[in-house]
Length: 232
Ligand SMILES: Cc1cc2nc3c(=O)[nH]c(=O)nc-3n(C[C@H](O)[C@H](O)[C@H](O)COP(=O)(O)O)c2cc1C
Image (cartoon, rainbow, N blue to C red):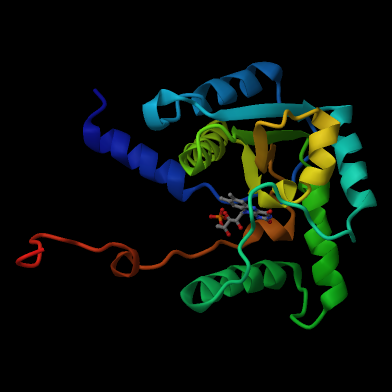
């Protein structure tokens, strides 16, 4: 019989074995699997169970056509519906740099090689060769917590993908091309584009898939409070 410890171990293994895939095989995923994947992600919690996300599921020619439209404007400044960070500082900048260097290291791209870094950034607009792209929007009618719920949905989607043996990657870069996405998918005014999630079978031979990111120690992110200061 499966015990709580078994379930925890299985879940931990699933989470620990997920990573962002940046090189996919072109073969599509069977429809039944995609359906199951979306059904699983749909179990994500949300405040008052409002489920404020919408998923535009692109496959086949729609993926290549959207990619072509994005590549056509790759040098035009990005346009996000939800404001992107203005700058990264302190520990956030350090973590961002570390993961960036790991990515370039895996690909043998020198830090000062601006052209190759740019070309790698444009791979976002090819969805790293994934045959499927989910574009996730959220409603504007419920304020910022709807975006929090939508982030939880994205996390469920990438973990569910892993559980089906698929690779996936969340793509804020797609949010940065809302100028292309909105007209292409006729997204209504009361929705904002949050991100894409590209998924498919991982290309295990692609060097970009070989690196792994690290995480901060718990004492950097967990504040334990066992007793409140007097008088507060
Ligand atoms: C909301 C969100 C947006 C992201 N956007 C991008 C993106 O546009 N391009 C990219 O290469 N990776 C993107 N990522 C992947 C992150 O870089 C990655 O999750 C992080 O470095 C941790 O690595 P891991 O997913 O392999 O554990 C995104 C991840 C999240 C959660």
